[in-house]
Length: 250
Image 1 (cartoon, rainbow, N blue to C red):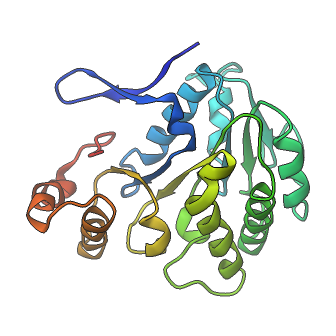
Image 2: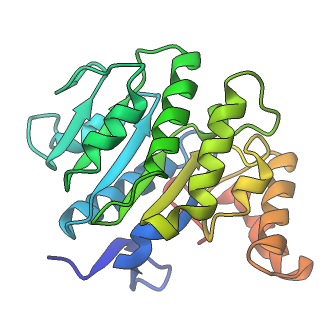
């Protein structure tokens, strides 16, 4: 059983390691399309599997099921339960977010909830119901939640059902550790994620980013959440458009 989570290597060649209590910490994985943010998040999930730490992925894009397959696409990989989507073990009941939270938290499992076949309205209602119910429960084993396409649920300017999903995700991000939860927000952009939720992320995996509005928002996170000075953020921000796929500042 692993005693640390290995997510890759530093520029020095040393292993990049996180402690097991990362399961109840909050992270942001942010970078433009193709920068490797989802790959980085799934590596964390794989390491949690090997350490015996359960997790839940809320996946509206239908890619996390691949953790159960070998690199060549054959059956194998990790013992992950898939709920919903094309590769489902269990069909998704779209109005049963609270009920599913009850069921999952009774088991020590890694689980993907694939929302990719549902409407965006269903995504948001399901995530709101699921996260609200989680915060009413206290699992025996800490649980990490990965939220793909975070701006769909916690946008800077919420409308309609997004207001409920924003409130639910904000609550679990801010207060979840008290109940044994951690959260990773995964997004292509900084500027479209609700700022108050983003600043609750304790650590940031910052990948390639080109747009000035996004780099400005990243600057604000570095100053407000990480406590860096404007001067200290300069070299990070200037390097962001030039980072390679799979390369992040942490």
